[in-house]
Image (cartoon, rainbow over all chains, first blue to last red):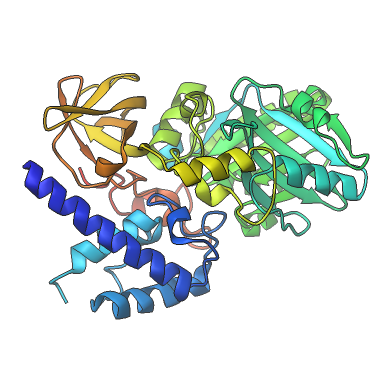
Length: 97
Length: 340
């Protein structure tokens, strides 16, 4: 990876992080300012406090926000563990939908 | 490690605090002042939080559990006596009791830890949600928690019954090929699953901002360390933790380089047996603290950043209604290693 490629990746992940934070705050009612939602913060349980009902809403919200489809089987349990794993998921689906 | 990742292992935790807070409203008020998270707890529920020093660095990595009108705290510290810290900060006549001398801790970890627990205390334990407490026959408590990414149970049994408990655990566990987990193994599992380790990265003078632990802090209340944390937040941080993987050894304290420049240092590192590579937690300049960069160099070893956890834990897929340890070979699970 060249420096330019790394800078482009950082810019892309930073932009996606902002949008995932927005989804979490506006659609999942995570009661925190955006900059208090760390990239590696766990989504469920004692992390950002999401529950199994939120998981369905989260998938729908990601599909809407990023204009991607997340069919069952693509959204594995590991994709829903942290904010960062959601970014990985979105990046893996861009252009695939 | 194999027992923790694929079966069940027994650990004998050392240096774990067990503290009871009682005395009516003072108990909650004292704990709320000590703890960085908002404390809204039902009976039997646990919150995983931090106790901070006035400068916002972590003193304790603690579980707070409500039990009737009292609270139990299980904690690990960065070398600080958490009982003395609690007693120094008592409010409204709260009573702080150090229970650790009277109880012996055991912990069980693994995707089939629930099966061994069910043999020991009955099938009802399978329905105990994550971060919940249950009482043990004969005294003591069990806490469904754990810091390995697998099913985890922390047991505190009265000292007089500890030998009998261990005998029962080992006899029942023999059917599940029970392994023994050392502190080193548990530390490696924490690293792989991105559980904060107050005895490693917790001793580096970092705040929850650099450690990515803001989700364990509240902006809605004042607590010990909150003023310093707010000040640090206002100033902004220069570096943030980032998970790295590499094919060769990475060492704690090693410099992290990227495109010829020094951009950070390794806080903790260890060999991942399940991944067959090395995993590290590094403190990296915020500008480069992102997953997916494969151009890092650590002590001459090429390394790449990755989103933790670095394992797709089997406990995510083991279902107590359908799986058993004995029939595990018939089940199909995803590979444990992610992004290898």
